[in-house]
Length: 463
Image 1 (cartoon, rainbow, N blue to C red):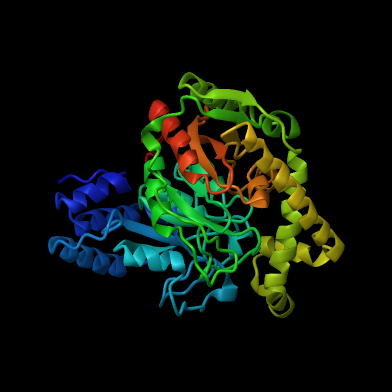
Image 2 (image 1 turned 90 degrees about the horizontal axis):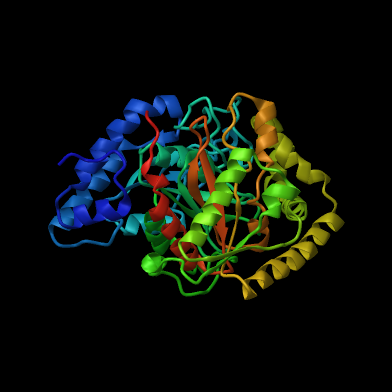
């Protein structure tokens, strides 16, 4: 059969299960696409076609014998290169870990392997998930498929680029201050930061332990829910893991939004930080569209965006420096300039500042979760601007800080970035939907209703 370039997980899984498509055919098509186009995008840091073909042949043999393992059996995917895959280097896009070969799979990689998924490689990131798009590292930064001169967002930059470009239907990202939702926003895909503790971080290079999350990146909401179904679950060996029932995240997708209460945190992007006019217009239009679909939409107020961002920054830089202190003392020259500067900032945060930030965090979290007594879902900006040029350091520094994602690393709330259109320059625009802890299924329900009504996920970059 002719394989669509942008075949998704749900559709592809059914074709594989009914043997109308082989995993080998799908995998070979995607490998050819990667070989043809990734030299322009640098999404892959380590491309593994031999492993992919072996995985695909194994999946086909098992499916042929009636041993279908579920919706990821024979489905290609890739991992951000801070996630361990046994036998391959986990470099975190850094000279520091260039020869760091993983001895075991990360938990998320274990689950994907056990599901029969097809591993295509390790994806570019920002150095140690903090450095920004840097040109002084052993490997180049990933570029945006909608315009290769533009930034992908980060730090799950390769994940965003690979999914948007149709190289894989799904990738794993991580999020400490917005690093799943930023590339999802700028690359026009769906990125979910689940509730803190929902997905195990074991086998993932840490940045800031109390803020780190692992989550799925896909082109559609349905596919994102399928991936979270697979990777979520309690892990007793991850001290931050939540011992809560997991699964069923797509169970409510077709229920629509009629009667749901959507609270718009408009002051984040209209007063606390003024977003680009095109972004503001698209977010307001998305909120109105949800109202047309039957939701009760109202503006709500929470703490100032600056309070959340300052709290996140203080905790993140402190914990990141603690994780990197030995290397910073012994090998500072082996970091790229951007990561070295950002991590070193944590050396100058006082213990009192860190303690006060953790106290503020509790207050902000309690206040934010209290809003859900009168709303079901919150809606706000993710990025304040469309993607800027990747070779403009001043624009990168300016736009990187202009976001409303960090608040929900502070609160640990589930938050998903959803495409809502395009700028006049043809670059993706996005909104962010946020819920109370462990309400991922409800977020997917709202995101899916909007997605199906507007169809932005059906537009793809021309490579």
